[in-house]
Length: 388
Image (tube, rainbow, N blue to C red; front, side):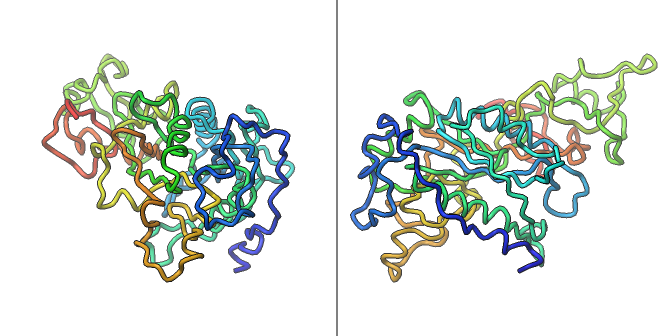
């Protein structure tokens, strides 16, 4: 326990006192009774909530991906800026609490403070959270990864700030909640409708699949040389015709009078956003029931969900009050939890980084553009289909 840093991860702070002077009745004029069951104790519901929808984020300035990867991802600052801009200004979140797992020593500049300071304190709160991660192994490892710092940050966010909001969501900086259709103006507008018309709904689940980077938005990798990215593609090679079909002709570099692509790997175009880049879903919507539920993310009511763990609502008021009543695995029974309709309401875009090394043979491992008949499991980039 001590080696994992879990003693320091236990959220022992009392929830902060709610500043009722900031309460705006227009946010949720029915905050006291809207969506509540009669068996929810009144002490769990703050009458005057400052917020309607808030987000919790646990992130670090730089990190290593799960497994044996030796590479370090330092894109969090850029990702956090895009994440906050989208969810606060477009999706309609009131506030986001950022648990900064970076090196937060006084002399360190490698934190997320420069990003969070770009937003008003009324919209973003940064909480220094330099607590350790036990290990970063993959879930299927014999000693699976245990991110106690992340789990404690989520528990802390719910305990400290849950009583001051109607709805809460815990997300990663590479995850976006996207509204579909034209019935509502924002995710918040849709959620206000749910609050008014579905008072028994306490948990809204977004099924998850990992999006791929659209090859048409990528550029040749130009970073430090790596063993798998050192190859060249010359004009006339069998791969060059495929590159041309993907509109890469303009990206071939002139070298000694010969068209040659200096790297066999690709990377995100720095002039494009992450949402622009990672916009290829591996399946059509609705996402598959068979596996997309496992990594679902949820918007939930913290006066009903008393403990939330990454993808699941572990402890709810219903479980405490009726512990002998049977519940489905990894879900709360209807009508308290329901899946968000990806065709008419919204969906979760998971834009996890695709590292250049994994794209070295994309032109051989991926189907040709417009080919809807073949599927190659090793393809690390998204090839736009002719029809969906």
